[in-house]
Image: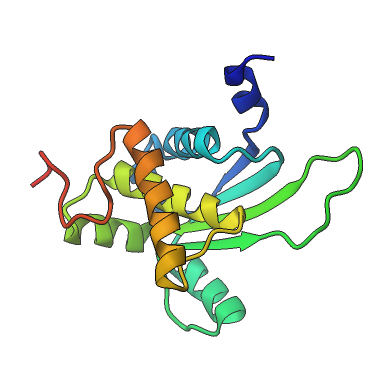
Amino acid sequence: MTAASKRRASAPDIDIDVQSALWDALPAAEDTVRQAIAAAAACEPSAGEMSVVLTDDAAVQALNRQWRGIDKPTNVLSFPTSTPKLAGLPALLGDIIVAYETLARESAQENKLLAHHLTHLVVHGYLHLLGYDHQTDSEADVMEGLERQILARLQIADPYRATEPGNA
């Protein structure tokens, strides 16, 4: 097996559920999500299954309130699975949920392309599913370094800079 086929074998299967018509404003959203996960899996492989839900602020706010006790929307939520892997079945990695209005607002405020910001949030969520976090400075350094590396593979500027070159 070649290195390339190992990477492909280690990419998760993705179920994408578009739950809000707001996403019609970004017709390539599903392709963007798949490309983001493929790039992330090329750097941090993980075979299994995962879902990505593209929804709105109201749905994300309800989830954020229920699971984190924070009664406001956020850009992305990640829910790693706690289900143990069962023999003969693919591993369940978890779910990533993205809120359209927050994504669009942040993209405008940070002068970033909507698709680039979506890519970053999906990569960020994927890394959370794999166990990465940013609660401490050292954890954040590791996670942000991986995000930069993955996004660079897609020719997307450092998401932690104030603006994207050529997008001002």
